[in-house]
Image 1 (cartoon, rainbow, N blue to C red):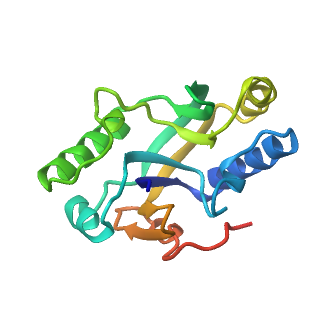
Image 2 (cartoon, helix red, strand yellow):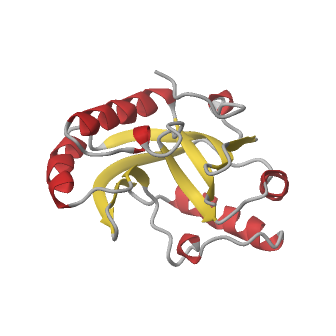
Length: 187
């Protein structure tokens, strides 16, 4: 299983990222739009684990300090073909991540080491399987929308394998943007 604490973009940026997903799909680059259950939203993950128990994670995290302004500025590729857009790291984003890790640690909730502050690469995944030809097609399409100044405004604990989504309380006026339960993506 794979579970995550996901942060969601404000609505205008989410639409722009979904439009990018569509352009990538038209260029034969698989995206999260069609990955697994087809309920993914453009997001940035603060932590990922084999499993996150939603209620204990929510209790440990409390209210997240959102919104956090970010600017997506670059395209990246992790080994295995994971294509992503990366925000410039800001003090607010890094502080939110450190606070999240500290709260998970204090509650004894384990997560993958790659999401620890000394190894975390903040990113918005576009494709899980972008290979050579796909990357060559994808990069120019990505740069068509970069830089993208936006804010992270909502959050949820999700378990994509089991179809679970538990919205997290945030200090954002957009908190309602995280759906209460998994459903088809917004159009």
